[in-house]
Amino acid sequence: MAKKILKGVLVLMLLITVLGCNTPAKAKTPGQAELLYARETLHNNFSTTPLDQKFIDLIVRAAFTAPTGGGQRSVEFFVVTDREVMKSIQRGHPYSSGLDTAPLVVVVAANETLARYPELHEMDSGLAAMAMIVQATDLGLASCVLSISPQEERVQSAANALSMPDIYTPVLMVAFGYPAADARTGASVDYKESQVHTNAY
Ligand SMILES: Cc1cc2nc3c(=O)[nH]c(=O)nc-3n(C[C@H](O)[C@H](O)[C@H](O)COP(=O)(O)O)c2cc1C
Image 1 (tube, protein in one colour):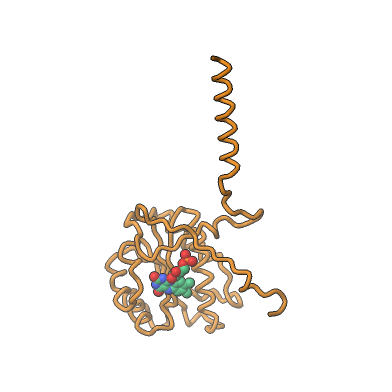
Image 2 (cartoon, protein in one colour):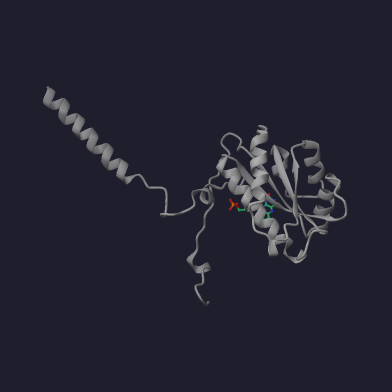
């Protein structure tokens, strides 16, 4: 009897080992920056759960880690948690359903008076957005980039909603929040060797 039990336990252990080995390992390359792969976009389906002020501060501070063209540091950040202000931004933006429920949106705007290279504002804003997204991912949050500039209607509605003086041009915004239940999409990573050209085409 004891022999039978021992045999059963051994078979079970063997099965666990084999099945464990066959579980597809999460594709991981040594040195790979996990946070970049954990990033998650939600177009809608953000939970309305408010974010701790500490989280908001961390996200906004992260934006200041991003490089800027010639070190101009002329993009600024409008932090929005008020749903009415979000609704006002949405009036001129046809693809902004994320703001229906997201508890936070950060509008990145160029301060033209600080600019030395205004033609680099879009790049500066994109890099700041990515820095905020990486920080938010580390906090377990999903995000969505929403373009504003150069579409005039979007620029006007964001500028009006935030009472921006004329020296500002809103460039883009990023919505942040927890995914609503069952809304997790996972990172969409689509590496294509055909889109990588080493030294020449
Ligand atoms: C420059 C830029 C502009 C975008 N504009 C919008 C937008 O206006 N509205 C929106 O819902 N999503 C917008 N997105 C989000 C993209 O649609 C989303 O990143 C894309 O579907 C890819 O999904 P992924 O982030 O999971 O790879 C934008 C993303 C980028 C990078």
